[in-house]
Length: 248
Figure 1 (cartoon, rainbow, N blue to C red):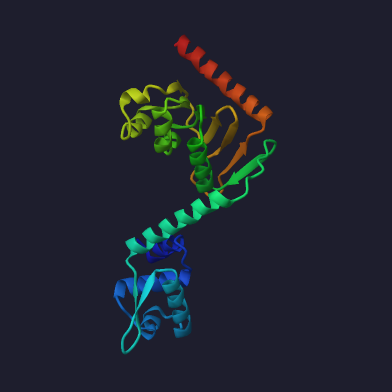
Figure 2 (figure 1 turned 45 degrees about the vertical axis):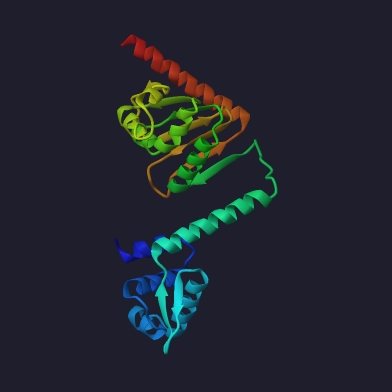
């Protein structure tokens, strides 16, 4: 994997770009002085010492005492594990002490970016209480196999409109039995586009394009009238699929 990609990923764990670059220098070369690190990275000594100080403060580097001070990187497994553990602790504290949000049921929210849309869908599945209606291609549905599993295990209603089911079922059966997958109410369609439509508990709707690009957008709403119209349109599509199926 290219170093730039590694640096970008390490930055997700609370380090700056310069700290990440110096971390990998220490990680590859073992204990180094600030001077040696500066020479290997091409970063000025003052910036190296500043970055190493940041790494030490964040638990990603250790100072070895001796005739000349040397620094070594904390094992990647150890640093990332500790970071996630502390993040979970902060999350628990926030959830416990944050004020209750004022939730508006009237608005329409635009979610921009493929990864952000996926995140929202994951949370919607997670918060499902009674039922899910989803219309999307087999390939898109496969992205949410792990999210679908607890819904089926808890015997919540799951209605699926898609162009194929075999690959989805194979993914689901990595976690649950074939019998459990048979709980899905399946409507086979001919569509293979990138459109996704999702209704949760007849209360929340998300619809948008999922092409895998940053430019992807989706609309999310809990506005009752919009949800009802959206739900009726999906039911009409299901009836049409049933009629076509009976004619063939």
